[in-house]
Amino acid sequence: MAIGQTLNEKYMRRAIQLACNGILDASPNPMVGAVIVAPDGRIIGEGWHRRCGEGHAEVNAVASVSDESLLRDATMYVTLEPCAHYGKTPPCAELIVSKGIPRVVVGCTDPFAKVAGRGIAMLREAGVEVEVGILEEECLALNRKFMRAHLMRRPFITLKWAQSADGFIDGRISTPLTSMLVHRLRATHDAILVGSGTALSDNPSLDTRLYAGRSPLKVVLDRRRRLDLPSMRLNDGGETIVMSDFQSLSEAMASLYGKGITSLLVEGGATVLDSFISDSLWDEIRVEISPESICGKVAAPNIAGLAVVPSIETIDGHKIITYRK
Image (cartoon, rainbow, N blue to C red; front, side):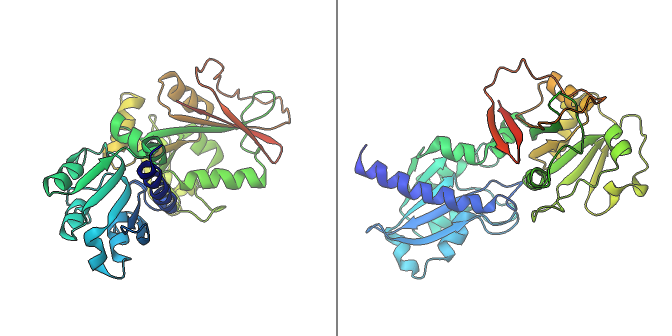
């Protein structure tokens, strides 16, 4: 591998590390990290996208540089193509040009319709040298939810349930540690969905009380209009969307995407989970399996035929199996 390529990867890995700091607050925007490097190899600026609506990674990296004159000879490494449109903040590509940064190394392009190559084109038209595709797979994986949502025009969908060793669903299976991990999973999704049956039988709060992250927006599928939302725990803090008028799950998912929801955690029950699986509306499935048998009443979804290789880990004596498309 050429020395220049090795250095490019070194600084891009640092940008990826920085981007991960936005895991709880950047969504529905992507996680992005940026590193600014002087010709002698010194890192003179760093930044990441901390929170949706606030400065992007490039803005924060530029702001961290103590002497802006150094930017005239610097290289910026950024995990995702700089934006070229006016949203809640001005275009980052425009900022890079105005500061006179002569070279930009980009991890991967942005599939979002308002960017989609325009940021790179704006930079090149202004005479900025742009290199694209350094650690591309890692940069794409960093924002797999964001990428899949904008490519499929529906949220990235994670199905989750806990089951006994003999294959029955039960909400009391998780241990204190695995329950906390579920709440962490909730905190990394824009929204969480259950059916009206689960809402009525369990009266869940669907929050992140066991983890320090933000609680997701709550979504309930209620085609038969059975819910009395004001009397339920679902109504205790945060926004709740009740979906009654939709022809198919695909239509409901497109509607959520239209509301800016790029990631959705589906927590059951079995009927709802089976519907998502049968419609192939999922991107990741997380199953927690207890070592105990309970001879329960509700069978867990059957995923034996999935043509994917699962990853398996053991936490607190429970198997956590993850399937990814």
